[in-house]
Amino acid sequence: MKKKIVTIISFFIFFSFNSHALIEVDITRGNLNPLPVAVSPLFIDSTSENKISKELGNLNIGLEISTIIENNLKKTGLFNPLNQDAFIQKPDIAHLKPRFEDWQLIKAQALITGKVEMLENNLRIEFRLWDILAGREMLALAFTTVPNNYRRVGHIITDKVYQRLTGEQGYFDTRIIYVAEEGPKTQRIKKLAIMDQDGANTKYLTLGNELVLTPRFNPTNQMVTYLSYFRNLPRVYLLDIETGVQEVVGTFPGMTFAPRFSPDGKKIIMSFAKDGNSDIYTMNLESREVEQITDHPSIDTSPSYSPNGKFITFNSDRSGYQQIYVMRSDGSNVKRISFGTGIYGTPVWSPRGDLIAFTKLHKGKFYIGVMRIDGKGERLLTENYYQEAPSWSPNGRVLIFYRETKSGDQGEGFSATLWSIDLTGYNERKVETLTDASDPSWSSLLTK
Amino acid sequence: MNFKVFIRNIFIVMVATLMLSACATKTATLPGQIQGDVYTGTDTVEYLAKGVPDRVFFATNESVLTTASRDTLRKQAAWMRANDSLSFTIEGHADERGTREYNLALGERRANAAKDYLMTYGISGNRLSVISYGKERPVNSGSNPLAWSQNRRSVTVKAN
Image (cartoon, rainbow over all chains, first blue to last red; front, side, top):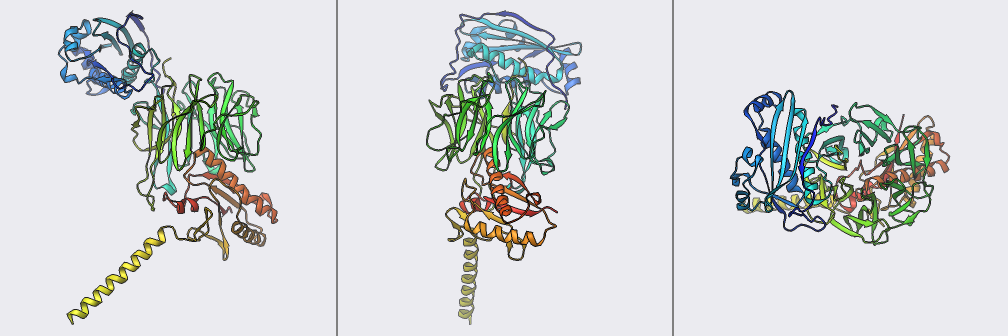
């Protein structure tokens, strides 16, 4: 697969205030009053437009990019992008210096303007973020890249705007890896699929000849670890997304499963089932050294490292039912942290380090929730017939997970879909995919 | 005459209704097909040979063999002893009401429970391999207690 890293040749910060902005977006609560923001279509001169049309086909790139930004902002639930039909000023003039009264009139509090040019064979895109009430520029940046990367520029602009207005890192220039599903429940066909966070650019990484499950990115987003039933031997695999090269991880004599990377990307942590008992192991990808981390006659699985790599959370049924535990990364000091009523599984450590997201089953309902790393402060974010396997956005503000519907007696009405919800418990949204989907995993920011 | 035809038609309709409702009850949970959460029916069972069922069923979250399961596995062991050129794969499965990764481990545990029992009845471990499918390969795609009980299983399959 073609590597799609943006080549940002230049990245100029021309002007930026970092204090005294009037606009502030509070992201700690569910936001009931999303900030009205106007995203002006990016201006493009006719010469550049002709050149780009030759490269990308007939496409209004300025409008495309502004639409990408609008959709990103809208999906956060924190912003309310205003209808472009109401805009009074032309994009080129607004980009030079907006007439703030015109934008106040349509109740915009922030305005994004921009300009696209074709320089030689590269796309140069600049944008500005304006504070309408204060009547001044808050941020201005320019990027140069190959024309094919225009969608990513839209995502990077959203990241910069989000960061400037909320004070937190964005999560828009990211991808989701997941399992694409089709066919009846009894013979489901599953493929690894990857797409941009907004659902664009879906690509399939396996053909569906063998069952694949639980893909997860490495920290640089170039490798994926997952479970494959290749030749009917369920084993943890490693896939290089760029080259498509796959290899089995280790030479275990039985099933390996539930893999994840360590935060430094050097190890894979997973379960290995031996004589019916599953324990947690790591394998160092450089030295190939295998280390057994847990040794208990219960099922120990779904391990996830803390972001500093010093701790591991996992689930175990050593108490009789699945519960969540935390231990040091060498396997010492195992402590149970979930004590609520119900069964707890799939713990995942937040990228900020302070929370663990999980799946909970209680009285026939499935919940996605979070708790602090000592198990206190449990909050259930969403309840459903079936849902599991949360994965964090890189800024630790949003969780993506999958849901399955209840089927009828013949399996009719079954579907598997991806959903996201904010850490606040608000802003639950379906994540659109081309097929049924499960086991989502969110990448880190592609441009750091 | 007309009246006779009318009565006959009514009779046909009634018989048809009875047959339809009999079909409907068959797909729903029949009392006696699940005991203590374990499937005891034979709807999904296949046979390795005459009188040798291929599968055993488990309670939710359990890998303990029931009396009926042990009986089935003893029949399998006897048949395996008589057919010593054959080897087998024991597939472990879970129902859909659990997290995917845990269910993989649970299926593995169930398949091994069956394997261990066969080994205590003299079948060499070399002839028996296990594979867990977790909840990935249900036999009954319904979302109801009967379907789930049929899916919590370990199935012995000829491997050669």
